[in-house]
Image (cartoon, rainbow, N blue to C red; front, side):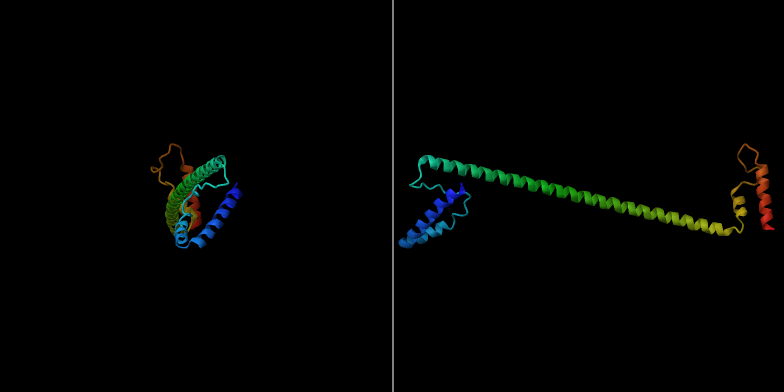
Length: 170
């Protein structure tokens, strides 16, 4: 299809060039107008002396179909670009949200780790306060008779802990 059009156009341009060389001033005007012919999306329909009207109609129909196809391709390309831009924007928003969430999680972990570390340091200081482990156990247990809130009798257990503490402190 394109070969047919190219041959007819090349023959036309060759004869036009010969005419331009022969005419002179009119040829210069023709080349000035010819410079703008590439800007138009379609070639002007020229009636060739060797072309029948049916062939000319077919040629016109083909050009119209080609122009429609080009317009459809451009519209599709534009839609694809818009979709691509929308996807990029959604991706950027997702990344920003992800980064914010990650930063929040990091700060929360830092705060939790600081609190854990403070508790651990405090426990180490309390642990070093007692020379004997039974002293620490005794300090955590209610050893006086009225301090125990439970219902069971734990006097024997209390007595065993106190005896163990006395044995280790001697």
